[in-house]
Length: 101
Image (cartoon, rainbow, N blue to C red):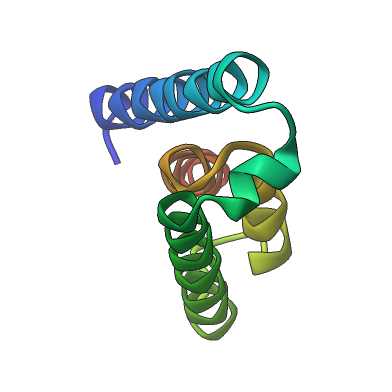
């Protein structure tokens, strides 16, 4: 993987961490009164369920087809910290970094 491709992956991971998480915290503190209010919103709940299902499926895929040194467990942790928009490019970037060393 070229340096430019790695830079793009890292840039996308940063955007995937900042934008969705920023929106989540804005709505949590401004629009909703609590996390329970988020879970009572059926549209939000459907996206949360979808994200957890996609994360589980991708973790299973990474367990069966490892990308490199870092395992699917780290992918789950990254997904919980920053969502799929962050975890997918960052997990791929981490494994690509280790392959060149």
